[in-house]
Image (cartoon, rainbow, N blue to C red; front, top):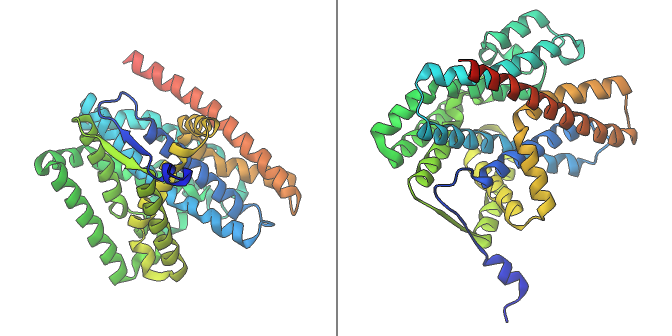
Length: 350
């Protein structure tokens, strides 16, 4: 009889083709936002946490790589099932992504502690989407909004990327995208621009991850399957996270080339939690996945408001932090419901 440990390591899982909804992708999205939000809470507000906890929370930063991967997967899967032209596609993103984002920015601009510079100029940089090109606005009203800027770059490129994929084929498109990102990394390293966030968060930095999501969506929708086992996932997770940590500790230009081990290691870890975690944990993460975008938008606003109002410090930080996390989740849930109803009504009235 084999030891229990070996039985666990040899467990096999398969992502079957042709599903209406891929639960693994939803879990990846929910797990990513949870770790990102916890990282921001620990590193930005819980000053009494130990250095070990603060360092360990940094793994949440790799969640954005999974976000881009999931975005590419979801957008291309939807495009395959319901083809859309550029204007129809962008109109839908406008109501589902842009408007909720601008509403949060409109609220945030009224709180001086969220940005110390010229708030009107910063506000306009969000509304007119030129924030992504000016370093002074990159962290305005919340450090997390850089992601939204990059996401809109992908929205502008999505339909052209679909055309490129049709011409190059599935494998050719993935190779083209990876080489484009690789050349971008080399360009940043040679010029020294990797230190500037507006360059390091440009869409070409993450193009290969977005394209990998499109590749997988095409693969599964066309009848392919993905077979995984626990040993493989554990090995990839250990190797990827180890390389990511080493590059982060070394710093400098290595961080520019860190995306491959970050996505592989973090993604494998997320799937391990999905396959081996308890039912309540899985259900919690899947529930969070449904409000992931809204939670991403509002969490810094809620954290900053809560800690500013309470003036929490020391031991009280943990209590206030827990309460603010609950408030952020509740606000995101309510906001998601409101945005969904409005977007749904707009679709019906067209």
